[in-house]
Image (cartoon, rainbow, N blue to C red; front, side, top):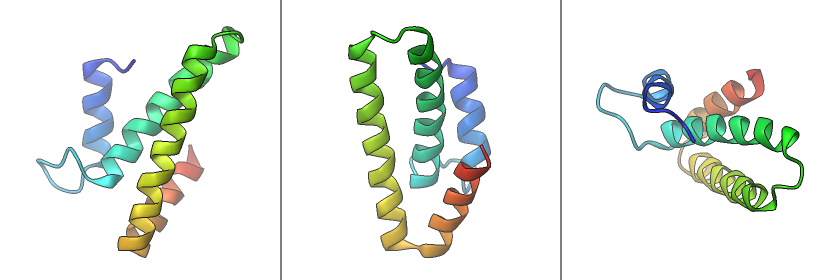
Amino acid sequence: MLKTKKKAAVVKKAQIHATDTGSPEVQVAILSTRIDELAKHLKEHKKDNHSRRGLLKMVADRRTHMKYLERKSKTRHEAVAKKLESK
C-alpha cells in the first residue's frame, strides 16, 4: 500500500500537466511503484498467495494501460517504456 506522500511524489514525477492524476503515464507509474513494493513483500513472505494474486492483477492492469498507450500514441508509449526499463 502506498503512503499518501509517496503516491503524490510518484504522480508529480509522471504527470503531464499540473492537474494530471489519471493519464495512462500516471497510472503506469503508480502501478509500477505498487508492484515493486509488493514484489519486495513477496520475497520475504513466499507463501502469501492472496498478495500474489493482487500482484498478478496489477501487472495485467499495467500491461493493459501500456497497450492502450501503444495504440493511441507511440511516442508516449516509448517514453513510459524507457522509464520502466531504467528502474
